[in-house]
Amino acid sequence: MGQPKINIAIDGYSSCGKGTLAKALATALNYVFIDSGAMYRAVTLFLMRHGVDLDDLPQVEQALSHVQVAFEMDDSGVSFVTLNDENVENEIRSIAVASKVSEVAKIQAVRDKLVYLQQQMGAKKGVVMDGRDIGTVVFPDAELKIFMTASVEVRAQRRFAELVAKGDVVTFEEISENLKHRDSVDSSRENSPLTMTADYRVLDNSDMDRDAQFALAMAWADEAIAANSQF
Ligand code: CDP
Image 1 (cartoon, rainbow, N blue to C red):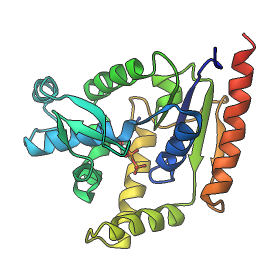
Image 2 (cartoon, rainbow, N blue to C red; image 1 turned 90 degrees about the vertical axis):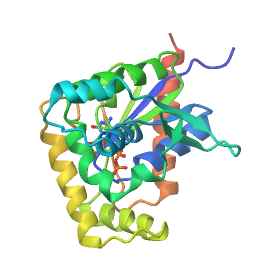
Image 3 (cartoon, helix red, strand yellow; image 1 turned 30 degrees about the horizontal axis):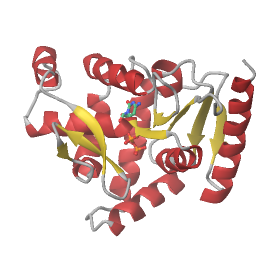
């Protein structure tokens, strides 16, 4: 029998590399990586496409009953998010979706639906999930919780470079403002705000490269797995 698997929760501010770290850990441990933000973005895309009024709760709830969000894998093993069976991985990364997603993520009915799905995905352990409320709400019992952060300049620069490389027409100011806006809405909302409890390990990667951040997180993961194996 192999070592018992754990769940790893990675929470933190917008665009601080949570997904990159989560993916690397999942690959190294042979766990499943789940990008919970992609699920909020997919729901946002659906509501935008259908012109749903976010202040009209019955309309939002009615729309939600028509939303199916899932993850699939392409031939090279790269996962992508689907909205009612359509691959929306590219579209959900647009600035248009980014500018609405935090308003959508405030709605409790949206959170209830997605948290339920996320908890099912992690029920058998062996999951690395990144988001804002993973260690506080989705998997409060996660054996390893990491809170990631980096300076807003570093984060905006990274996201700007990422979008420009994809061919998106965006300005640095637009990206920087979007990150600050989302950080503020995500941290101050009433429902499951981005927050940290004493059981998180903090990882500030402003001055760390990917290898250094991976080595640190992997050491924490090994420690958590070993501690979990004693029982
Ligand atoms: O990639 P980035 O860090 O910019 O954001 P994301 O992880 O794709 O999440 C997009 C948005 O979804 C966040 O700004 C939050 O408003 C919301 N979100 C959330 O409320 N709870 C989560 N577990 C994940 C994302």
